[in-house]
Amino acid sequence: MRRTDLLPKPAALASALLLACLGGCSTLKGAPDALINLAGQSTQSRFQGKYLEQEEVRSYFRLDPQHTQNLRLSYDGRSLPANEIRQQNVVLIPALQNYLQGIVERLAKGWPGEQPQLRVTVTDSYSFGPSADPYGNLYVPLGMLESVESEDEIAAMLAHEMSHVLLRHHDRRQAFNEQRELLTNIATTAVIATMVADSRLDRGASKWKVVSKNPQATQKAIDDTVLYTSLANTFSDNVWNTAWGRAQEDQADLLGTDLLIRAHYAPRGASHSLQRLSDFQGKQEPLMAGFIQARRSAMQDSLQRLDLNGFTQEINTFVNQGLMTTVSAVGQHLTRSHMSAQRRDDDLRQYLQREYDAERYNRVNKRNWLTVRNAPSVKASLDAYRNAYGANEALAQKNLKDARTLAERALKSPVANQPGIRRSLFNVHMASGDKRRALAQLNAIKDWSLAGPEVYEQLVHYHLNNGDAGAALATIERAERHLGSQEQFIVEKMLAHKLKNNESELRALGEKCKQMPNRKEVCKKLG
Amino acid sequence: MTVEQYTNDPIALLDAEGRLLKKVARSELPATPLAAQQWNDDLELVQVEVAGQLVWLDGVDVRLSQGKTVPMPCAALPKARAESATNLSTIGYGAGCAKN
Image 1 (cartoon, each protein chain N blue to C red):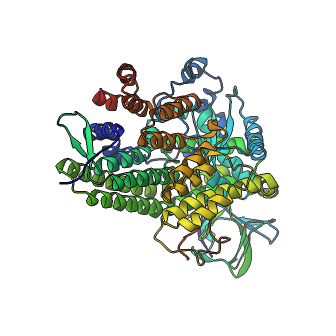
Image 2 (tube, each protein chain N blue to C red; image 1 turned 90 degrees about the vertical axis):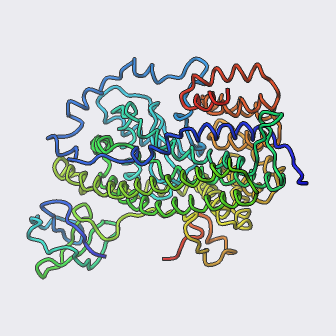
Image 3 (cartoon, chains in turn green, red; image 1 turned 180 degrees about the horizontal axis):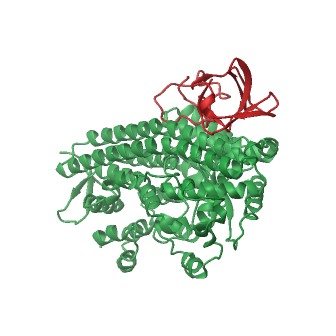
């Protein structure tokens, strides 16, 4: 007779969650369509004169108070939809932050209209492109700062992002959201699928009893999946940063160039950044496709390890199809974007020759950025994040020894207790099977307001997998406060209350969840 | 390195310091790809031969075979370990990249 062990109930509810997804993950099905860009005549050829002087731009000079009101958080500050919250950890390097904010303020002086609030935040990501949200936050990834050579180039990219905010492109951001969801949902799906793959649902006496024939292997699979999810999150944001439609990109290029020149920056900085974007996108395609492929193989291994019933076979098919769809979608997107960056550069050069024939020959200033980058506190902090990223890379290659060395090296820096640094150490200890020391790393994070959802998710899942509902709820409470979203972890919150047998709270959360746009379908199934 | 494309019209012909000599129509310039004789990274000038004379073109007027790049980390690319995995001065950003 085979030995069976009960798994924690979260696994059972997660199974239900996956079943809900099997019923219709429209994000996956619609992904390739959502990523197709528009083609046609370039924006700059449709008007004469400078873009800043066009009527369509002048209409944005006055801020719309109603519009601002619509973007504001609710009184409790926790009502942001899960798909609108910041996705990465914040990096706090004060000298760098002040320098970047100074560039934005210099650029903003060239905008003749009313000024929205614009704030620069450095993010723990090795993506190349910056991004902006509708609240005026301009996110600058570490990967961009590793690449650029001049202040003019930084200014060009910030001017472009500011222009998205000034022209209120977020009002038309549906495609952007769909693409982001595509990739973040894949990470979540990986966790759920592995939990289910290593389990068997027993619908007999207990409605949601999950049994595993090999609890040690199951636990290992879950731990591995937490690690893989973390790695997926680390790398996946590299691909969704250029999700605007063509018209919006053109408009932001044109307005950004006008602002750049008004601030006396060399416009060739914009061309430099577009050349780098083209190079970056060309390098991303094999990286992302290869990574997804590797993760698919790992998941297949876990599927094959246990003798599972037909229910799991269905999931196996789903996972394979889902991931292959993603590989295809990402490939299409990058192929298109790769061409797009060069086309944007061509259009911009023509606009510059037409409107700024003298200024386009101005030289970039490499000195300022070099001075800031080499300031001791900035250099030490950037080095630490580079080492932490290197640790994640080494883990992806199953090189635990180098991963540990790099992650520990990152500790000797002014940013040692920031989430991105501690996360890499968490990953190292999880990979070596030392869960106690892994947990200690997350507990060493000094300021949780800097953490992105993935770090909270790691800690929440850690506690749930250990059956510690109280600790999971405390972490969720902190996440809601700092991320401004109840929706993000509503399902995990329900799992925690399920673990505590707190039926009344579970029902109340279930009702609340049905109102939440990104989770309501799952919650209806759970309910 | 080669000049792959003239991106503007007309194109400025410059001296080694980037001073304007004259502007010429794109149709009067040699066909691309055009071999580059020298590259001045500070001034972003590329030296080419036009009608038997060496002149300089500004990078804003041409697209070169080698543009600006991103020193990407190579996580999860097909495996090719750093030359010495134990020499940690070489790993970190870009560890494991395939060598070109």
